[in-house]
Image (cartoon, rainbow, N blue to C red; front, side):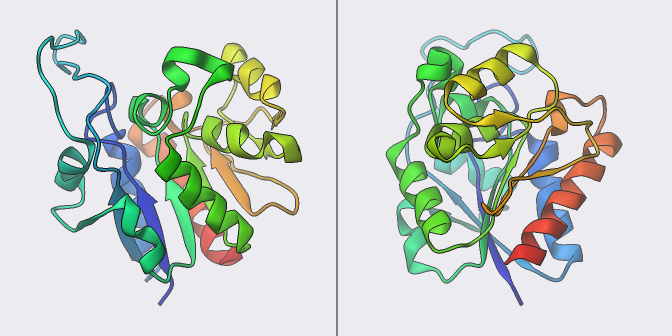
Length: 218
């Protein structure tokens, strides 16, 4: 049975992991008889967003690892321990948590920095020739870390994000929601998911393909 790490960034699209994307990733892995091993950094969220109103909840704090445990039904590990596991690949779902907690792309754009724990994990997988999957906005992490290699990624068709990806040295390839982009010789797989939507059945098509490709490359 192949084991795939899944890095979560909280629980909720506006300040953490996009829940639909995470669940569909876990479902696709399970249907393919692969084992998902969930991880998250033990850090405070950048902020907390009331998902009913869309407003930031002032004076409220939440922990990324604790919140991510909601999606993983408690079966989750601290990201700092990821190297103790023997894993065959790594997938990072989207949601603003990828751009606020795993990186600061939501604040600094093309000048973003990736959380050191995340960068270290992703780069180790790349160095070992293991496949990496990025959903939704998460491909900006791949662009930041591997832009110097000219990797190809997609976030769909958003012009500003595509321009930022190009500014980081990577190549953005437009894609439909059901499509995946596999970067030549890099084992990096991306799909737009909710960067395009419009609904859960639509994003499921691309996520299923991404998971299948990651497992194929593993």
